[in-house]
Image 1 (cartoon, rainbow, N blue to C red):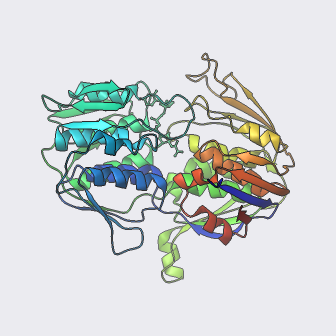
Image 2 (image 1 turned 90 degrees about the vertical axis):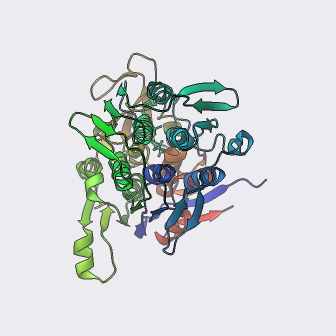
Image 3 (image 1 turned 45 degrees about the vertical axis):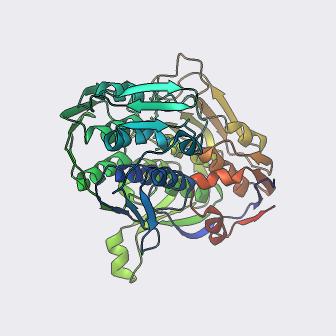
Length: 451
Ligand code: EPU
């Protein structure tokens, strides 16, 4: 078997224009939501990424017809004839993604039973599913965990419940939404996640016929309805991909315009970008249309020359600084003058990639303490979850192995910023979340080649 290796000749500023499509962390959930409808759904601007393939496969196994629509990136999902699939067929997707856990509610509503394979996703901590299972049981589901996967049934149907999450988990909030919309009665969810991708999922469910109120203070109330229909939806753009390219512009002292990036989903990132010395210009869709026919808005990010400034940051749930923005930005922070701090409060083990940056000449030390901000859940639990980055450091080429999706993109940025030729191993992992990243790198003038 050939290794998937990208040879990166670094040291050239990335320059040009690329486009982001629908957010990976919304599109896959929107596809699961289609299973709840009694008529076909159409999703636009769907990126060609691995999670979309996995969810398409799982939907098809359950009788949903998934086909390409007339427009580039349009996906049509017809759930008129939902049917059971065998555990063997489903298990083909074991370990490939975390999305299958979200099929529980929709399959219980459509079939009365569900089988969920072992989950995959990035190794960034233990990633338990206790909130999901706890909530499903409150709805009345019977959950049986076996070595081959998880079997669920709902002998007495699913009923609305009063729930409170111990932490505002994105996945568990989606689990509750996708289950409560067709459960009998009212569900009240406290301490819910309110990420823009969740609000977009709520918009989709409302288009399908659901009744969902988002109250203040992270409270979501869902009135169950007996039936839902298909939707047509253009997803929110991928704000993680947009920020990743923004960080690449800074780390390589370049200039990248990210078409499709939207200010309102990225305000926290944009503030940080400016505070460390990055420049940006936002063009709204309406303004873009008034200028060049057919053009769309976006955000241009660039390094203005001179030195970047150090910053103390912590990752948090929305509207805080996203955990998925952390890794690419840390690469840029290796180029800032002074001591930067990154306190990771969402995942307990998401700083392992800093070792690779150190092997390239960065000076990053990781600590168990909660540095630079308020104490978090991990402070007393012995996790290396704060990083101190001393800069600026001249990065040099190295051979790197990609550990997970976001850290992988950070490795890639580091290799592009470093002088010399690096080999990045396991680069196909990046395809899980970054559509056509090699074509985009080429468009930005990067010198990369497959081994
Ligand atoms: N958690 C629990 N128990 C649960 C669920 C979560 O303890 O049952 C904990 C997690 O271990 C973690 C925290 O709660 O410490 C937050 O996890 P969350 O459930 O919010 O994460 P997720 O839904 O599994 C999604 C994204 C992640 C993103 C996080 C946080 C998808 C497919 N994944 O994960 O994206 O980092 O929300 O915003 O939407 C990525 O795109 O690379 C990625 C990892």
